[in-house]
Length: 369
Image (cartoon, rainbow, N blue to C red; front, top):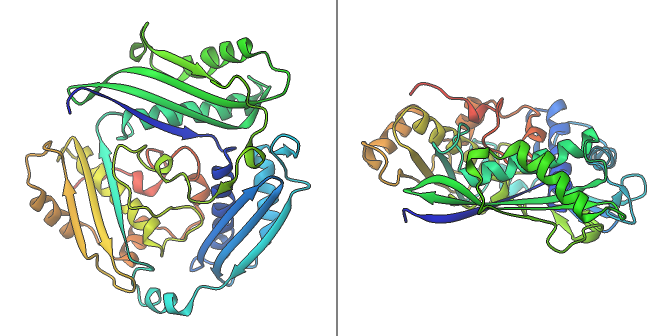
């Protein structure tokens, strides 16, 4: 298709799923601060004023899981059990064991921790080499959090979602068709004031003026009320926002989530590496857009397959690009971890507003190929 509409969504750090992602990544970082070889696979479930944290951790680190969780809930801004969750009174259940020896047997020798497929993607639509719709949705969601934290819009609460529909012409983003923002707010907020503030202090501050026109539709809190939010309004679970975390649906996804997993899990580390490679192929002029897939088998070091798709935007064949990738990059789990330096506690930086397109993350660095 050359002319079409495409929509992507993002969520704020107070969305119940992102609350769970944040806690899982905070636990991972706490382990890595003391033990760079920690094996972590932790998931969090939130419902009402109760958290359940479960998974497997094998580490020499001594961490206080409940304290980490309460501090993260506090940082996000949940302090009211009547509307979302209270970090002071919420119940926290912990069920954490060690990594299965059957899995550890393969990982210990440098193999993949599981079978699976992973994808990486990049395009030249934005300066971040991300698809336009998800880039704008993330910026709106991040701005929602900024105006709440700064007090610029003091009556909004942590939970929120954004959605952007982009009109493409000749495969390039032409204009924004629709902007949708739903944000949790305090009880006695006037809806007209809410809409006015979000348009002036969020949308106009983020969306380029030339991408909006008289036909651009803006929807603010379509139900008219969003007081009950967070885990009280909807359950939250680690790993349930995988499309928000990646490319907004514009590129494929292998199905594995990122948060709460250390780098020995190729669901996370290989997806980061493939983003790095795809971004560098585009940035180095090999293609205007690029999607890469690899597949792994548990316990095996080398990927089973590599597939490159440049959507007809490269002068080189896909076979030539696969050969280039194999020549320039080590795609074994150990090679990826070493190349991207993934044994550091950097993962809380990734949790919100996408794992890709941010500065100061190793897989976002551009290098000459």
